[in-house]
Amino acid sequence: MKPKNKVYFSNQQDKYKITPRLRALIKKAISETLLHEGFESPAEVSVSFVDNEEIHRLNLEYRGKDKPTDVLSFPMWDGDEEGIGDVDPNGEAVLLGDIILSVEKASEQAAEYGHSIERELAFLSVHSTLHLIGYDHETSEEDDLYMNKTQEEILTKIGQPRNV
Image (spheres, rainbow, N blue to C red):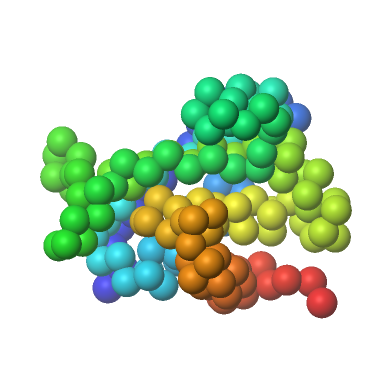
């Protein structure tokens, strides 16, 4: 049985309409990633949609990088040996963390890669969820290879395969 994940959304940009269908796709991408990784506890994730200006500010403040990026991940889960980290006050879900998506940057990248913005945002959601549960492609070549393979497997499974 699939755990019941909670995904909360906040739209802080006005460059792209965030539809219920898009929110459902992102929730599906997050949930499928957790299922793929054997994350058995219900999880709680916050997703914020921002523009390039806001993600640039956050990227500079938290990572010291003076440029906009496509996605930022802010993990809250400590990944203890039982597989359960911090739990919400009601004890219902593991607090995994926050995903900040630049819809503006995702739109630019979708055009560059020749696929839909929906596919790009789903990709970034899978990518960020993998970061929330501990993978780090920037410090581990093994994680980088695994993340690249896993992202495409999950996107194909949720109906967002790579354009050939």
